Image (cartoon, rainbow over all chains, first blue to last red; front, side, top):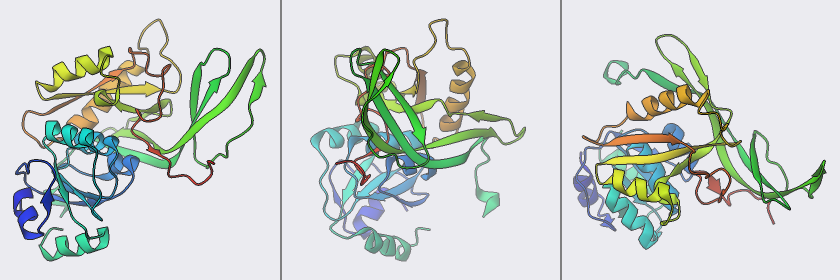
Length: 109
Length: 177
C-alpha cells in the first residue's frame, strides 16, 4: 500500500501534499526520542505530537507519512517543514488505537 | 520474516530512556548538561568554587550505543547531548543557511551536540563517532537520492543551547512546576 491509497482508504485529510510513497509498516509514538530509536524507513508514524521536532525526527528516520490523531493541528512551520521533507501529514479525528485498528484491517502489518 | 529484513551494517543497542538535565552558570551563562536515567527534580542553585550553577530544565531523551554487527565493535554515545536539525536553528545562523543550501540537494543536515563543548584542538574521538552515526542513519534511508549528514558542533550550539532545538521530549515530565 502507498500513502495515497492509505489516505483514501482511511479517509484521512491531507494537511500537506500527499506524497505517494510505499508503506513498510506502522510506528505509533508520541515521543521524539522513541521515534528516533525505533521507527523505521517507510513507516507510517501515528502520533498526536505536533512539535516541529517530530517532523525532523520523522525525516531523520525516513518515515513515509505522519498520521496526526485526534484532530490535532500542526503549526504552519511544521507543515512547511513536512512539505520540504516530502512527508505527508494526514489528519484524522480518530485516536491512535482506532487508527491502529483501521491500519491493521487495511492489511498494514 | 528475518529473510526479508535489510541487513544493516550497524544497529542501535543499549537504548536507555532517561532525562536530559540542563544547567547554566549564573554569571557567565555557560551551559552544561548531563543524562540521567532517573528523573531529577529541579534543585536549588549550588556553588562550585566561584561558579553558581542553576537548573535550567529537563527533557525526556535517551542514550544509546551503536554496534557494528559483523565485528561487535561498540561505539558509545554517552557524551552526546542530542541531535539538532538545521531547521531548529535560528534562520540567521550559519548552520540554518548551510542546511537550506544542502536541503536543495536533498541533503538534510543535523548537528550532533555534545554535553561538553568540542575541544579546540579538533574533533578527536568525535571524528570516528560521527562516521558511525552517519553510517547508521544513512544506511536506513529508503527515499531515493535523499541524504542525511550529521555534523560536529562547530556552530556553538552547545553554548547557545535552547531546549526547543534538541530533538528530545520537552514538557512531558511532571516534576517541573
